[in-house]
Image 1: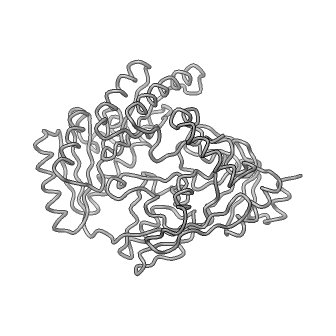
Image 2: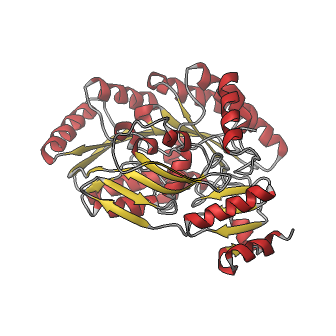
Image 3: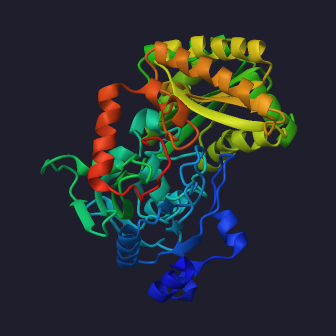
Length: 456
């Protein structure tokens, strides 16, 4: 069978691409691994996705769903070739209802655009991955994405109340709806959110929205050491505060930002906290002032408070560029979004420092201090060298083993994909893995959906 001819016969020339530049673009994400698909299909409707999966199922052709390609674990790499199914053209915001406090969107909608559209109607969609201006809602659903605001507001799963999913057979499943509470049968929504495209293709998402907080304040505090910054985190919680975001960054991350953006943009110090509070204007002013006093007593190198939206966004612009600044060093950035119990925050930073000394790789740590989801980035030179890669793998073996021994997990928001497939057995029990395999086989018996990833 000539795959390209069959796809064009089914869907027309405008939906199918087989040229090498397009296949290269659709061969990977932000992780380093790539593999070109044999063809790319740009679906525009649920019915087209259904037809494609029926065709693929009948002919045992691999299909790798793809959002915006901003994943960090190789989740949309079509390792078995076949078809890369792009959902980028399914990018309509179908409805935003203030009365019902919901949004209905297609998977290709960019997260930041959804936030802007809901904000214009005084509604709030809290999940805010750092790549919110590039990543898609469908990709967020596939990985159960989080972001800084998940400390107070939770992750993507907490906002998905309805899904339309095309199964491997081509059948269309609709589960949930526009109501905020629903206990009808099993939690099928929870099954698909975070499933990384292995169980079905999401074609429509109904999201729960909140009232837009009318006020916000941001505090930026720099410290001489990471233990000082981590101690401040614990004191914030001990004082009864629940910020919407509480971010931390280490010396290597800050130095990379200084080289990339200039020393005047980055506060002086070797550790940095960024804290957001939101709510009603009076309560935000009060909380921000109390937090400012608390932080001032911790002897910070620098302390700044912003109470206007524009000024807050300037402070956050630095945080959102940390990953790009680290890439600008020229080193290969291997981002591990591990999660440890919050009490282990200092232990994790100290362990990363010891790991750096043992293996000789710079390690940058930053991320969501409030919930223990710290991004440990091994920064490797000459990563294409086999010896270097072997040393990186050894360092990761040690990192994940330590995180698991503390009761942590190897991923908090990026997923397993290809990048963490090697550690999947260590991170789960036998019964859990067997259950994953049974669910996969029940919904995708021929393993056509995103094959080659962590389950098999």
